[in-house]
Length: 434
Image (cartoon, rainbow, N blue to C red; front, side):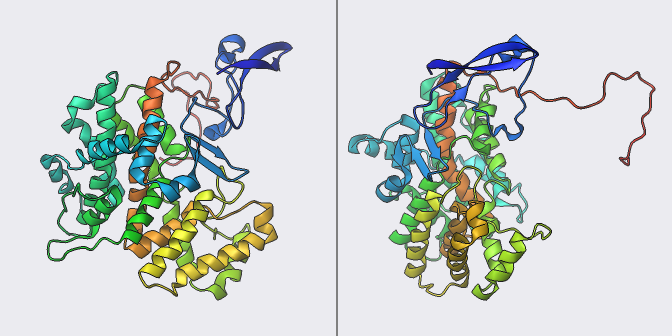
């Protein structure tokens, strides 16, 4: 970071010079690290929406232009030409591998797809109706008790080993959570298969019948994994970084990320979008529900439109729209009512002044739920699949954070608005019941 300019901030007739750091692309930042020490004031930024918590070289987003890049590569090119493991390698190492490097990386990841046999007993401790994400959080965190040879965050070799284990075992744990939830036996990983093929096989094969892996479906899973692999400093990635800043082991950090992703406003949005399309039910009902969405007094909300960052068409949604058509045509669903509602709703929304003025464009959640449902996954698995994909971005950010020389333990400040010092014995009336 190099600063050539300064921002001037005046507080009580005193001026403070704050360095401005130039971004390689996108928004520059004002360094306020020494503001408290010099002025005695903190800044107030709920949700940290105007605060850069770190310096990163991994992902770039331009929300106004609808741009998403991993390490400088446009997401459209990666989705078209790469698979998930190549993109994972890109995120962690910083550049696309050559054929020899990629072949080696495939083997390094596949060497860790199996989970410790004793870990299987963890699943028996969950209720049969437990949410798969509950299992994902618990088992991911439990890995630290089984793989104690990769917990030293100061050892680069152990850090890389832990990362490979997390990425490889994320799909195994996710598939096991699915199998446990539907009462079927676990399926061991098959290292002859690609990452996506292996995941599908672990989820849908059974001992009584061979599962034929479709290239179209496997490619669709790869696209979904790639598009969800990273997305800058979102809630779950920030959670991983914040947990990691304390020196916590990598498995605990990723488990914290899984827990954050579980929130309906984050990883559960694609499930909410699918439920909304099912609620609308038919194309003839769309106008009625659009009116409801525009009514501030109505509780109905159109899910899958708009994004915290994108103020243009989400580039991931464009890719998934085409992928969705391929999947439905492949499996023979030509007149899917949910897809028909989705396409018609998109057409109307893109022409409606209300949506245009508010820049409410379809986002990645709009189509991903439809694809996953068509493949055969229940809504409860949508966020698990998101977590499997995001394991790549989380580990990349965790590595970057550990290697950052200016990294400090996360310690956000607050604007205190509670009671001042009160003597013991003084009782205040309260509206809260006890």
